[in-house]
Image (cartoon, rainbow, N blue to C red; front, side, top):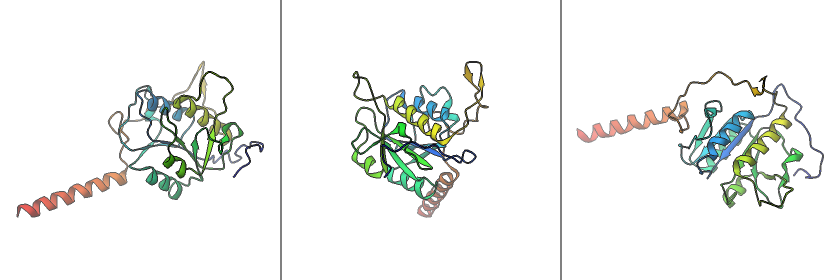
Length: 218
């Protein structure tokens, strides 16, 4: 485990920067997922992994959900296994105020990383924490709140990773950043698109049901 008091480092391979994934599980309040997606595209997240329901409330995203790939998983275990075994993630880091957690301003990253956020109000549950390799937290200095809103916390950690990874800053136009060409929507609003693998599995399932129904009618 990295010493929390060790000097922070910056990723060197800027030409091939590490990838950043975001795991959302149990985040359900109206504005939060949409606003998190807006931050995800601002800080160059490779993909957002939505666990549980395929549907989400995109309110607050302002169209930014089209600019960041989204993946759907039925369970946290399946999500973490795919990230580690198929997508090359080195660490799954949970964002939680805990005695074992390292301060995020020390940039405790080591390569391709998945960040897991807790749910609003209660933070991370035991299952989430057990699936994380390490925990990180955001230092606070004022006395008026016990913790940060999940959208604010997510944005701070995503920005911290982007700085460490050396992501190139987006071009600006006056007081705004340049927005890319609007991608084509390939799923209903507020729903994670199906991958080709998932679509193929659905086609096979439907074909099997048709065959079974035909056999029963003979």
